[in-house]
Image (cartoon, rainbow, N blue to C red; front, side):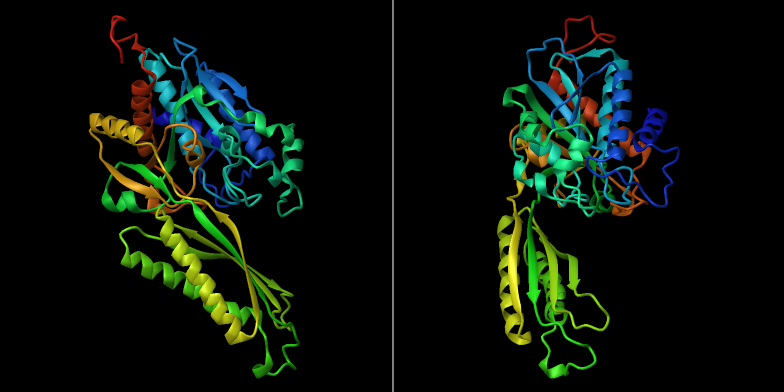
Length: 424
């Protein structure tokens, strides 16, 4: 299995070696994402799975069950990346799902429920600033009005999908009926160091911390840097500078005071006119706030608003705050978590109950179907980086837990080890 995982990891990443100093760039609805999905389809066909693409470009590789009228047990993730990202974020989940199918087929297992391996389109927000487009479409959560949103090259989502042969107006037809799926499971690299620090094999995720995102616009007054007296300036960048450390300090303090952590980051900044001899007259910063405890996110947001009022008065600028996103945290299915605990215990492996600070496709699927998320370790917690790494051994363990979960959820027979009368 280790050799199979190594070879097919390279195939999905479209490379001959995982040593890629510039990382991997497969943006959502790009030719590169398409090529990786084509590699997935080839592997799935080799495993004897039937391939279907929905109207949003998601790919469903289906293992026909003994009873096709039963809902499918689904597992999957995504293959797109951030710019110069790693080759495991999303990809490990897809690879381990395929590996689980291979392992079960090698055992002679035949499921009662159909089994599906799903690759979702455009999970990352790297291209359009909007994440999980494919899984939103499948779960019926997609707002078609976002079709006009453009990437850094001025290409809209509508135009990008059309280039690949998809019709944006048809994306709503990708929604699946509730009765089509029994449940959904996603495997992902942790993107943190909690598993490493606690020396656990797996993380079983309870909640996914969805963000509040704010755009803070600071209106000052541009002027010549050499002729404008210091005591009369309305420098937008000077005014917003204290906010950057304030956001970090506020989240740190709240995390120390509460059992549930909250994180907040000033993650983007735009300065205008951005000329070395002109006082910044306008600054725009983006702030990302996350916690599985929604009340803590609200406290951080309110603190930011109060701080901005103070900065307005102090620096004689005008500040506007636009709320871009305010999504409640998603808690995953308790029955699925119990099932995963049983699988891990039967394997003799260790697990840690934990929350996810990052969003994943599972958070959309969980709004319609019982869903679960498991983490495997990634070296030094590094992710969205060329040096991102998950060991083959950890991925093999991921294969085992997915295979065990599929056998419990899909039912069926192991033809090589039973007479045909006992259930797996």
